[in-house]
Image 1 (cartoon, rainbow, N blue to C red):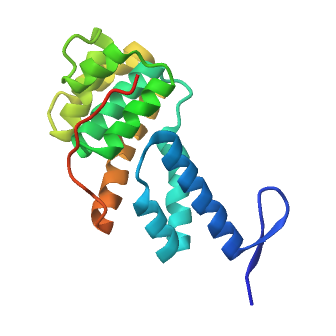
Image 2 (cartoon, rainbow, N blue to C red):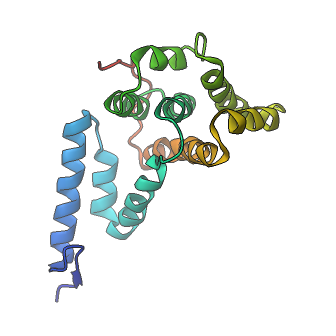
Length: 186
């Protein structure tokens, strides 16, 4: 007996049809971003319910309404650089380019923030300070909120936290390949 559910389109689909649809979504994502999402396919095959929970996390990790795109991606790229020096970082760079972040901002972020305008440099320093539990996080947070707004900082903070989830899941499942040379796809 197959389990049927009501899909978003209002039609009934079986568990297998839903799983195949998710697999097609993953493969389309891989194609679009030249990204190896084997770990997601593994999750889907081994534990579809856990994959669905993980998949529901993805929109939260990318949510941006108040934060300027350049500040958001400085936070995101810096956080991925601290958590993953390979595919996830490259994906963040591709997404930043797709959303129009200038190549120079990306390069400066990857170079530790040197040359960034001060408000963006503060965001980069904040990511580093948070990772190191440095005492200046309160001072940096206050300045960043003054630069961009509290709602913008909340979005950047979520992006920073989310950057640890993807590489951690990949590592835990045995799909972490190590560091790769990061390319700026322009």
